[in-house]
Length: 373
Ligand SMILES: *Cc1c(COP(=O)(O)O)cnc(C)c1O
Image (cartoon, rainbow, N blue to C red; front, side):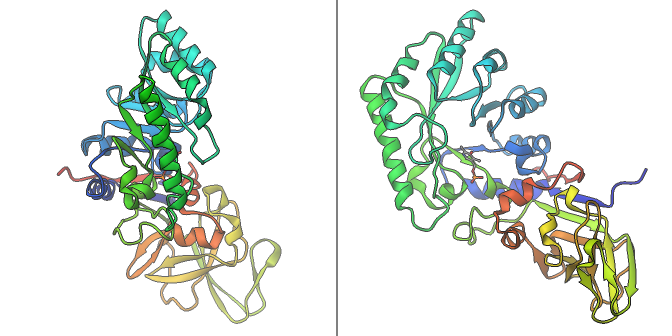
């Protein structure tokens, strides 16, 4: 069986260079965020590459994701930045995975488990300073202090998350930072000093150095994607992933003939059509029908007709010589042209994060290995 004619190329050398580029923006330890299969890039090769760059601590959203990493790299520190359940306590303590704690019941369950297993559970306290998602609020200081009294727990870290660090106007982010510092100082005054503070996501790493503290959480820009249209454009980030396919069929249709379901495209003149074996089941969003573009032979061509589950058609009338087997670039560079996840996100009214996370598992990831330094 031949390889699928659709694939995502993940350049681990580019990942490596992006990691080092971020080290010039911060003195703090970098915790790469590798949730959602490393933003669709494939968590195991990404973690392997970053360990070789010196990263020692990784952040994920789910316990399941932490376990996947621990199974291959038992020596690295992994923290779950999202919620875990009280029923996860045994796994967390046994596997030495650091949970984000923001409820007393959660801390109590971890403490009981740690006592029973004769271990110490490392935890990070999550505080909500304005994101409104998870975390203790300013008014919950006493509960954090209560957690610090529980046996066999060690509060190694405290963290919060910005709602607007990717905007040019950092006024709200400054307010959140102030709130975080107030909570930290109050705890300290009450005798609880927490060694690791972490607040900054990619956008804050790039444009808000006062928020770096001991540790920063590097996500989207590690993968070479800008945190927003306002932040990261000047950093020289190189996208790590490109998405490609090979033309499966080429033909000319006559004036008046139509393409795909619903006949939403009708040829106004004899039209050269290239079929690409990629569809919405691969994560190419159907809303791009008759709208999105792909690169072929270094030129842009438009998607015509509806995107199907597994196939999509392009108009290539003005691109001479297109033939079966030609490489089509869905995301990435071809000659002087480039299609970025940010551009596709603009077509879709979403963000580049959703574009890369949306490239489905059916698309094989092909890795270009990093050259060791
Ligand atoms: C996803 C996430 C990050 C990483 O954010 P980027 O914008 O991708 O850098 C950091 N912290 C938390 C809590 C997150 O959920």
